[in-house]
Length: 448
Image (cartoon, rainbow, N blue to C red; front, side, top):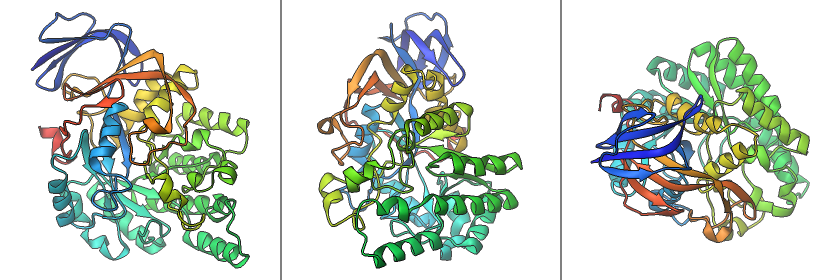
């Protein structure tokens, strides 16, 4: 199948230019200022042409409690909103062995509307199994320094052992950093005082817990020579600790999520469990929000991900703030959020591509096939109308969550169409639900 995308402005990680793109059998074969019309001609006049976004932190609960989310629905949302590759891991059905990986890959055949890679979890008593899990094709190991979502914490000794394995394998890890002793003590004190108001969230999952865990994990990453990404880094103080370790040569990166750029700490007082995620929102003023965008522009963050962890309104309303599930939905809104930020001048459109496509693909071994509109790459392409807009409404959220923390906001820019390997998989916010997505094994995809 041949296609020519004509007349658009092609956006890359370092700039943009008016260019045409030629596609043959699902791969990009030319990007030039003017190409002949061959095969299916796609008119991109007046549109921005972006690579499909690569979201490397997604939870689709499948297999598991699929009333919260499943692969068909979550990837329908991804495709409709311009995300063509995800890295998924569910805490309810963790991958801890090579057999687990093979079983999940087989289960997901025909269930995904976008391409996907998988991540494994590292259990304290399963560290010796990490080499076989890595060879099974996972993109990274997820590690926790605090027991969360039923996943046990790695204390300092176990984290050191696990990171040494990562270094030996030339592997990758994503670490959720909150110090367990600090969060446990805060929980004990708050419950002893009879507290069950929403303000317990930022006192329980406090800044000190994140700072201490990040500092320790950074030292251990540096000393082992491992490659690590710190998940959902929430505030400038934590970024300063990371920058210090990077200056000493540590191969670490900070992952950004939209919620830490725009949601304020005190929103939990009114919204309750609808703002229960961890680490929680940290912003306390408009000045702090501006400072976070300054840090994004400075390069302090490597890339954006959603940390899409959906629950329905009903699930968020069950019990009190202690019992409600952690997490926010985000796969529907993250590209829209970043397009809006670019059109508002907070970042550039190239920053959007760099941070939500190119950098995450490179960090987790999915480049050069993913994350860029270059010759040889998969023809995963998103057409964006920069003059359009999208008013976010709960009823338009495709995720099973059925709501968004950004409901009521109007986002500048609109995703017109999404292509996966040259096939249109969504148009005007509607996914065609063709289930064409395939498993991406970072260890083998470079040879294909």
